Image 1 (cartoon, rainbow, N blue to C red):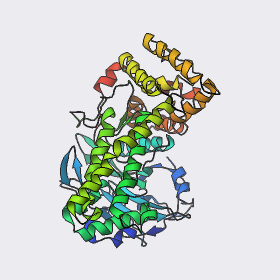
Image 2 (image 1 turned 90 degrees about the vertical axis):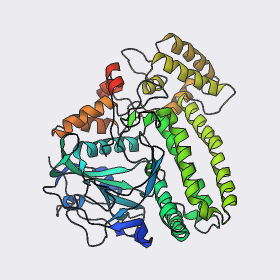
Image 3 (image 1 turned 120 degrees about the vertical axis):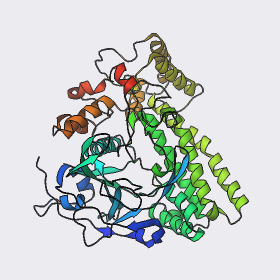
Length: 487
């Protein structure tokens, strides 16, 4: 497989090193035996102003074998609540290559995943498997084109080495791009293991990087909490919109920048049920589809607790202020969720009983084991379905009520279709197709992987050539399918 080669056009700036060294460890990636570029995201290269060249390729940099002189590589320290239990964590197999500045002075973390052991590896080998890194590449690109804030993957580089998990697998390094890798767990770490001054410096750094409009505020901690809450509400509403299940919503996987990241046990819901969960380690359904709003509120409460020392000098007063902010979550969530769900059925201006119409649809879908994506798509897309998604007694009855409602709009059904097309994808990364594509790709056959990537670049547009991608897997697959924390 041949790839266009790129020069090292990274424009690195090391703002994170301005923080106390409590927050990171200087560490060099462990060189790999035989780096081979397996997948390169040329679209993202262009977006980052990395230009083509016939000079020495980036492969050795993206494998961790060569470090540009303009940067200092680090592993970040953080903590986090994992399934409700607090742990000291940190980048155990990820190393920050640097912070790249685009021509428009947009700042992005460039991180190598699977690049070797760090002081936070906790007896791990610091490596990653090819299949898991290809999974993150595929799903993160799909999320980007679904218009959901997300990390993105710049490259997957095979290492020429074996990684030992349940079985021996090929190793790989993934280059992950994010606005930053600051997370709720970073603030928990500062609160648990640092001083008030450390926490204040972290907060000021975060405001300067992500929320500069608040940098001079005398209520920096409170403004930070409010901004992160807004971003996370918007993010999880997006997840609910497309049927995405993150699978491991620990506080260390909750980004301050409001981006989806850590694509381990994630999956997309097919048959609608709020209790849907696929993660092999989520035996109690803590992070099930319908629990995601509750969990993000729980995670934000942990952020509020970490910020208490800088919200107010008096602890009791700080608790009262933070509690008022967290108490506002439900109303903010309801507003955004209602707007989104009404958009999914083509209603822009809410009237009495509209939300009841949404609730009735979800109840019918659950009763009929209806496919989440196809049911909404069938409301506005003229597709020749093998079996029409709305062809059940309860959904037919609901459909008639819905038509009566949307025809009350000034432009009627035509306007509703325009609205629905903005909210409802036609194509998602179906779990069974993802698994097939990954199995083939690890054998060197990228045909299905590339077809999925191409199809998912325009997920809101029906393409007859990808008709087979519309259909969910059989019931047996759905009942047995599990995802794992491979990333």
